[in-house]
Amino acid sequence: MLAQLHKKWWKILCVVLLFYTFIYGMLVKVPALEVLNETIRNLFFHVPCWFAMLLLFFVSLFYSVKYLREPQMIYDIVAVETSRAGMIFGILGFLTGMLWGQYTWAEYSNSMSWLFNDSKILGAFIGLMIYVGYFILRGSIDDEEKRAKVAAVYSIFGFVLLNVFIMVIPRLTDSLHPNNGGNNGFVAYDLDNRLRMIFYPAVIAYFLLGSWIATLLIRTKIIHYKMHKITIYEKKHTVSVK
Amino acid sequence: MKRNIRYLLNSFLFILIAAADSVYAQASSDDEMLKNNISSSPSMATGFYADGKIWVVIGVIAIILTGLILYLVRIDRKINKLEKELESK
Amino acid sequence: MAILSFPVLIPLLKILIRISLQAVTAGDVSVNAQDILYLLALNIFIIGLALVLFPYLWRD
Image (cartoon, rainbow over all chains, first blue to last red; front, side):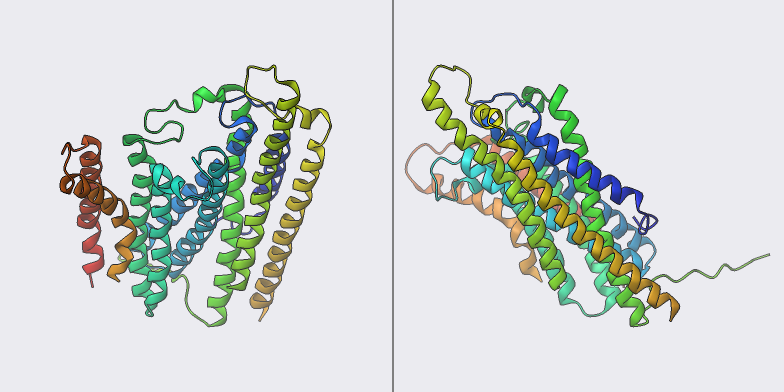
């Protein structure tokens, strides 16, 4: 993440892929399915939100671990801002999932039954709440190094639990989602031919968009730190022994 | 803080409209089902595509996407300028 | 600070409420094996994570 902060190539790639996803996502022929009808197109718009969120949280985890090994402030900045971008995509994915589920899976309208009947939705909600707790935790500690260390530990905890609640537990219990709780996987949706060609670029596009937002936030933070003359990265003095 | 909220609102709006557009597609196909009443497979929005209305949807999505991307590029350029100023001081 | 762990408790509470309701009302007192598996998995993950991560917090 840090090396690519000022490069332009992946931003252009992101824009191209986003336009490709949205335009071809509406134009491609989709298989006719029973409950979903035409809304299977949300596969290109809603599911990549979650994948992008997981990838962004993974980057945040990577830099959190890096901070624990070598306490440089820049690693903490990257960790928190990528978490923030991941949080944005998580909330978007949750809201779009609510909308989609309300029209396809809800037993009766004006109910919260969708939240507690499906274990993956509940798991995603809990995972997002854990990351909200991450930001609250950061806000409650004043000393910078202590805050960075505690937040890094909490971020490891949060990422593992998020994966448990979204990936592991739904496969064990009943769920309406594909590939969880006794349903067919994505292969049943004819994902081999046409849909995959739009789905994978969509994931890449959303992840690049998320990292673009994250890099803008990171650069803003770096400017803020530099203006207040706070050291971000201290080079270790190389001591020659011989 | 304001900037973050604006990011959130803008991205939410464009994805919400993109998702909502697919729901419109389903609504008009129900009218077609009432007219035809013969197909055994689940109803899809074929009338929507035949009329050419899908291009309206794509136009809307393209305009929203362009607007958001231009906003991001503008913020990117502003931060570039700020960094250069800070560098030269 | 301890209130931050509330989201993790939500599934725990949900299953325990369901099991307690079954235990209190008259009727068949069978326990769903899936629920026990879920509780066990949740416990293993949380205790495991706490064991691994606590030394980092305590280092100072």
